[in-house]
Image (cartoon, rainbow, N blue to C red):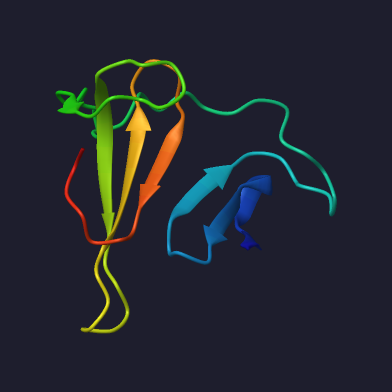
Length: 101
């Protein structure tokens, strides 16, 4: 949410709910949309390609996947593993407590 405060000579200070402030030299109307966004960069998080985990896909037969572990909600239950094929994206669910076959 933005709040605008008028200063001298038609200079407005716009304050965001997060605390960021900016000065603009024209009045904003309610419902007015900003025509373009300022380009700020690509960010600091860089996606990293993880090495494949050996698991044969049941859909396409490819031999590598990306494993994801989902912890069980009770201690007497086994964990749930999801294996996403790196080639076709098929997701296989393993929740029976057996190993990778």
